[in-house]
Length: 396
Image 1 (spheres, helix red, strand yellow):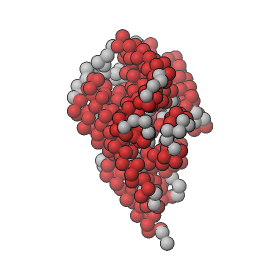
Image 2 (spheres, helix red, strand yellow):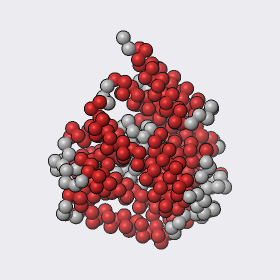
Image 3 (cartoon, one colour):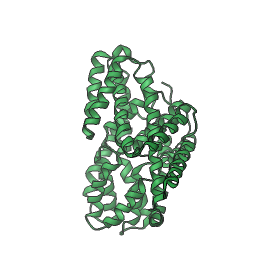
Image 4 (tube, one colour):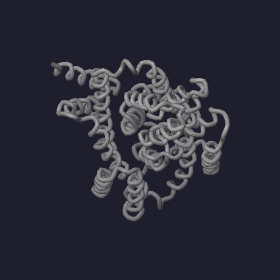
């Protein structure tokens, strides 16, 4: 594949737009990324997108932010990865700081209804991504069966370990039965770091995991250790990190339970990564300056996941180039469709659809995305305004 063809400035502009408009949590972010970077811009193919997504789901850390970081890396090298992270995270991090002041005024019924409208948008975006990926990555009956079985298993068991098991089983199936059916364009574009560099990044990840949580000293060191450990050991996305942060930040008495839950509730209404919640916690951490605390918390909670994915990608690239691995890639691609299908039902559908009007708005939003090809930003406005209007009209 060709080397990185974009520029960091281009990556920054695209991900800044995503950081301002990608509502709905990690699963919805996958849909936004695919719509913008696969369909609209062609930075990667569906098969390449699926491979990177599968790797990010295998690793601990914030999967959607790791996916964005990796796509920036593939597009424009190390500076592109940094640009993707900053642009995608900055809006939500700044909004989290503002929410600390505005939160008491945002708990009325209209605000809650608007947040519900954002969940409906997430349903439409994920459905659009699932439909597009299924057509590309499951072109035959065998891979459709793999995707359906993966989806059914994950609906029954929502544990993070079940996702790893499903992807591993699909790879095993593909290694035996799917080799000859793999699409030709499946390898990843050239990376700025090779296998040796990847191994060095993995060693750096382990060094941080062993040293930072054990360090004692000023409040800043303790803050860095707590957030690095949380980012390095969490599987399953932003919501799973909640108990780890609560134990590290609330249990010692640094942040009150009320302040912790208030910030976590505010994070649900924001675009961009849920891990931006770290900026809020770092800002109210009492032992350091608010801006310094916010910056350190943000960097430390994202850093381990980025070191992991940047270290694994070059190793995977060399492995995937072998013909014997081609069938495994085909199986993994089909499993990723099943994983996304299960997430479409739970938590996206279950959180978004409480009554028939919610489903009707979601179907219209999907039609605007998939058929009319309307920008996701306008679809967000449509769903929120419509849901608020329905609520107001139904009020006594």
